[in-house]
Image (cartoon, rainbow, N blue to C red):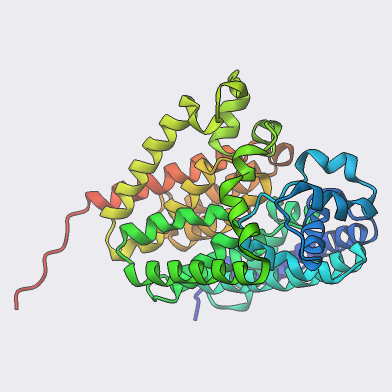
Length: 402
C-alpha cells in the first residue's frame, strides 16, 4: 500500500475533490466539442477519414484522387479540402476507415467514431495508470485528470484523429515488450501511424528478434489481407506512386502545426522546394543523423534494468525527427512524461524536480495552442540522455563468484 506523508494525507480529500472537478470540467468540455462536431463536422480531419471509408465501401482505389473527389461531393466542402484530398496512409490503414463507409450519413459515422475513440482513451488512461503510477484510486484520478487536461488530448478530439489508438498499441507494446507478442502491437501501431516504425530501433538494438519476426509477419499478413480485399493495384499504387513523396503539399511541411525538427528548420530557413525533397535539407538531415546515432548508442548500451529509459528515448526521438509530427501526435508524450514521475527518485531534485519538469512540459504544449511543443520534445530527450549518461557512468556490478 502506498504511504503518504502526513501533510499529503491531511490535504488528500481536498486534492481528490480538485481532481474530480478537473475531470468533470475537461470531460464536459470535450463532450460538448464532440456533440458540436457530430452536428457540424469540421473539414479536418474526420471528413477525410469518412471519404476514405466511402471509397472503400464502393470498392474504389483511394490512391486515385478522382475517386475521393467523387465521394467528397455530398459534403459540400470539396474546395476547402481539395489540396489535401489524397490517401497518404499505408494501404492496410484502409481497414481502419472502412467501417466509416458503412454509414451514408457523415454525422452518424462521426458519432460512432467518437464513441470508439472515447472507449480507447479510457483504456489508455487505465494502461498509463497501471504502467507508471501507484495502483490506488487517488493515482487513477490523477492520471485521468492529467490526460484529460493535456492539450494534445483535446487536439485529437477536435479533429477526430487516430492518436488515442496509436497510444493504445504503444502502451500494449510497452507492457509486453519482452514478449514476442509485442511485435503484433508494434505492427498494428505502424499501420495506425507510421511514426511507430521508429520503435523498431529499440526492438533491433535490444535484440528482441522474436518480437521483430512477429511484427514483420503481422505486417506481411495485413498487407496480404489488403491485397485480397482491395486488389493488388490499390496496394502497389502506394509504392509505385507514393502520395507522400509526390503529392504532399509543401505548406504541410512548414505549417505551425508541424512541430518536428523538419518543420522547425523549414520555418526558420528559406528552403526552396523546387530543389528537391525537404527530407534532404542539411539543417534537418545532419541533426537527424546525429540524434539517431546518439540515441541508438544509448539504447544499445543501457542494460536490461533501463529498458523503459531506452524506449522513452526512442519515443521522443521519433517525435523530433519524424518529418510531420503534428500537434496531435504529441499525445504520446504522456508516456515519457509519466515515466519521468515513475523514475522520480532517479531524477535530479527527486519528487520536486520531476514534478516541476513534468509541469513545465505540460505548460509548454499549451502555449499558443502547441506552437512550442518542439521545445518539450527536446527537453525530454535531453533529460533522458542525462539519465542514460548517469546510469552508464555507474560502475557495473560484478557477478558473485560461483
